[in-house]
Image (cartoon, rainbow, N blue to C red):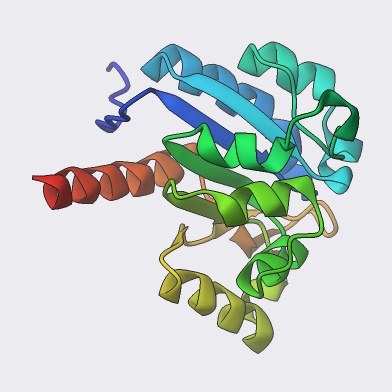
Length: 195
């Protein structure tokens, strides 16, 4: 049976993917190839320092077809990297989102190119947390609620095999299907609102 992707209409077919430093960052090149093949989207990637230690910027550039932004600003270019990154996309996917990144984003901290780009964007933001057992901690749950109250679309975590214990646990990064279903709902709601 052929795989059916959710219907997602983006005005300019542009998606910024923010990658943070959780182990599932290693899966992101495959996700990027899927987004390009399934939807024909123009995909750009912005990485944190921790993400760049888990997945090579070269692999992300090859999979996205674009240069990778970050982890640092490039002041010598004469451009404002985070503002250009924020203005460019129709949607932002944060895949995976660590507890650290979520906490900073929820509290308006913009001490990295990835956080600043996400904070400045007016595009819908879909966050795919990768938290493991931290997903049940009160502080983490508070931060996720804050993001949702601020209009950020948080995809519920799934279950997965822990790199630490080798056993299945909750709090794992959601699947690409769950992330795309969330983005589909967001874009459908936006289309209805603009009518």
